[in-house]
Length: 295
Length: 246
Ligand code: SF4
Ligand code: SF4
Ligand code: SF4
Image (cartoon, rainbow over all chains, first blue to last red; front, top):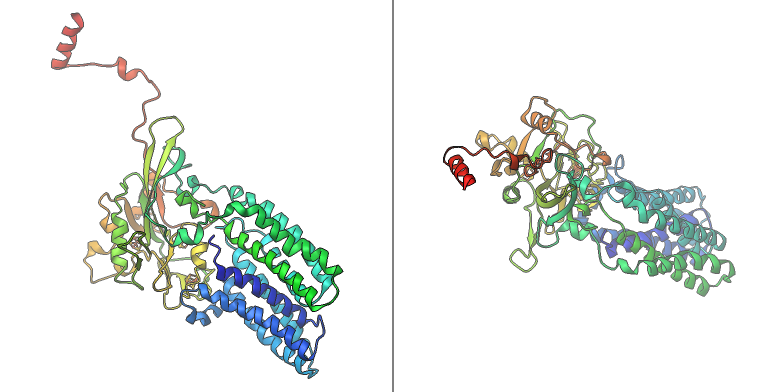
């Protein structure tokens, strides 16, 4: 799949943002005054910024309100509703923390649950697609949840939770890499099944592309076939594992609670998360590529 | 609503004959020609006269080569690819806006372009590459089964079929109702072993593909039979006899 920058930025930032909002919603850490303003602001900034970035890849973003209507069937619609619900539910909590109004925190728990739901919905947009075997697996929601958990914990200064989530992230990333590499072959879809020519009828044998149906790439090929730069996979995987997982898992327990320390770890995590998310898209192969003899 | 109907009254679709298709691309052109002036946003092209022309099409014709296992000559199969109007269309439930839907009356899968936000998720969900985004209008385009022809009283009777079906010079595309076992397409599909593309994905396509026939295979049952069995008659027979005696 084409790794569109807007979608990569959206999923990484909004995941981290909703992770942070979930922690703040349940009162971890309990903040007040300008510290609260800064943390809540960061959570809202990342979450809203990510959502805005996601509209850049829409053909008609001005109609976005319609995306709230199909929650019965569509994970994308559910994501839209959950995300806005979360941002609304947490607003009074944030205000109360900032201005020390002492309002009850019940909405905070609801907002935190909605934040987790938002991340899950985002992940299911990808995980539901049978056409992309690498994504169509439980590791996809697990990865999105753990990225949000680790990123949110780091920003919220929750060293213990951050270290645990980062360690789990390493394990799930490794699992996703291993299973994902064999996912396409495991579904056994080939040019033979895509055209039926390999298995049906009196003419049987090896099928290959004789001539392409058009002379330059179309929407399908631009969007769903991505052949470039897969050669750097191993380096990027190492970067993802060390930056997003191993680094924070080892450093968090040792880091004194200073602004600088957290900023460095957060940056490290972010670099790893971007590498992992780029690979998530660039390595995903869509079955439509079979028709073109390219994946 | 983007939930799929549990049942459709008709199951309109195409039977595509891979045996007769010659890959002339007439259906590609006819489809583009009809659909860039009627239903919805015109199918735009980008850089149409330049070095890398590109555009939205609802129908594409591929060309494949089958190298048969028995080492006989390779076979070229031309392969038209358009929306299969799946019964369990995965492109429909993913749509966040309700723009994508499947009609209860005839099973046609359509996009309401006024609601489409151009997120592209339906194209990701389709295994068959049947949906292409219009780069100018930012809305999703797909085969409409020429819904604006097949019910169109302003057209003469013989034109009330999809443009691709009407134009095909070899009659390789057939249109009809697969829910009716007596329809031409149902009978054709039954007689010729019409099959589904990637059936494992559970989409239950309406369109059927009719497999290519084997036309060029040597008679392997008796490889030397033709050589032993020359029975020339008439002048050739006389010549054969005469020459044989010299
Ligand atoms: S062929 Fe693709 S676009 Fe058409 S109904 Fe099936 S899944 Fe949807
Ligand atoms: S591109 Fe349009 S039709 Fe397709 S899923 Fe998005 S809103 Fe629905
Ligand atoms: S039925 Fe109409 S829209 Fe569909 S491929 Fe044929 S000409 Fe194009």
